[in-house]
Amino acid sequence: MMDRSSYPHVLVALQRQAAVAIIGPRQVGKTTLAHRIAAERPSVYLDLESPADLAKLQDPQLFLEGQSGKLVILDEIHRMPGLFQVLRGLIDRSRHDGARNGLFLLLGSASMDLLRQSGESLAGRIAFVEMPPVGALEIDDTRDARERLWLRGGFPDSFLAPDDAASLAWRFDFIRTYLERDVPMFGPRVPAETLRRLWTMLAHNQGQLLNASRLAAGLAVSVPTVTRYIDLLVDLLLVRRLSPVHANVGKRLVKSPKVYVRDPGIVHALLRIDSLEVLLGHPVAGLSWEGFVIETLLAASPQADAGFYRTAAGAEVDLVLDLGGKHGRWVVEIKRGLTPAVSRGMRNALADLAPTRAFVVYSGDEEYPIAEGVHAIGLVGLARRLVDAR
Image (cartoon, rainbow, N blue to C red; front, side):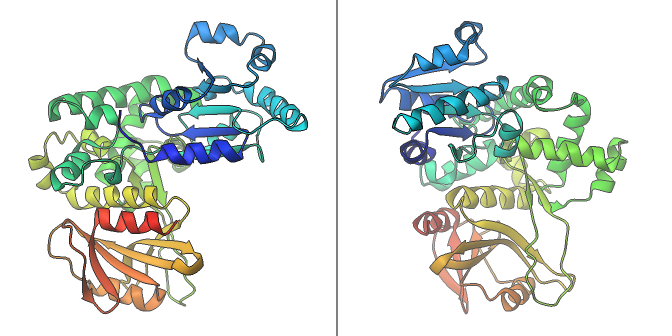
């Protein structure tokens, strides 16, 4: 079993809230983590995809009232949105009776907003912990391991596959399953082939500014339809929209978000990239690496307000992290290679943003200054700094 960084965050959340939801894409390891927690305390686990477990919930209030003193784990909670109202009543009653926190652990394959839309809101009664795919801080600290993670992505079965071919086959199956079975659960019927084409187009345009009109023309659908499909992929935690930072600098700023397919292994599967050698020679390599770095850093600093900065005059930086408090604003430029440098666009962005810290993340491991106030740093080194800054 991999030692996942989400584990301590779930334990802390269970200590302070009656219900905790672990959200993340399917096959990311939520169930494995829940079973680990269940082994450590009196618990009952229900898989809402199992007919036998569903039968126990024909009268959910009666069944759940009988589990007093146990942590009730409800997997695939989005399949029974009506349970949210029952849980709210049970939580309120337990609070009235002076019961402890940590009553329910909910697992879902969608974002907070989508889970809340699926049933009665548990506002004030629930904590959310996002569980992303395996990250660079959860694997061996070697360049070979990080490059394998970049190529295969962070879904455990893909990353731990015996070889690259088996990993790619697993990702092909994952994509097909999501399109044909999982996506239809969360919204209006979306043609699987249309969504596959959109997902592939986003992979080809990894890290680019969102141009919904061009995507709509390529798919022969309307702009609102494309926007709705992207919203769905965002809610399923498969795609990230990174918003521009609107600093008050009196300059014309880019207004469109950047769009990333969040897991690099899925990017590479959609583009049929089957080896590190092919990836390094592919036009998407640089932006794929950029997306990989951004996901790693945001997983290390989930509380940060994140965005990018770009002006019409050419000032640009890949990632802006507003950490708050004494840590202030950090800016990050991302370079694939071993010779990091400060670009003119980054220098102009630094003058506009006046950050607390500035870094250029590169493919090496050493940290050293490359310009006044700017340090070159490896991915793991910066991720660890962000963890320490929480």
